[in-house]
Image (cartoon, rainbow, N blue to C red):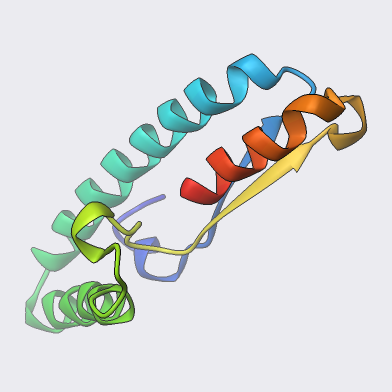
Length: 108
C-alpha cells in the first residue's frame, strides 16, 4: 500500500477458522495495522497536490455517505478502502463455535 495506489487498492485479510480462539485477536491486529497504513497513505496522497487532495476527500465522503444513514453509524468506523475478510479451514472449525464466530466476524 503506497500513497500512489491507496485510492485503488482492495485489501484482504485471511483468518484461520480452525484456530477459533485466535480469529478475533488476529483480525483486530491486522485491521489496526492496515488501517494505520491506509490512513498514513491517504494523508500523504492528500498532501501531494490539490487534485490528489480532492480525490482523497471524495473517497472519504463516499465511505461516510454509505454509512451515515445506517442505524449503527455512531458505533462504527468504516474502513476507508474496500476490505474483504476470508475465513479458511471452515471444515476444521468446531461445529458448536461456528454460529458465535460468524456473528463476531459480521461485526467486523
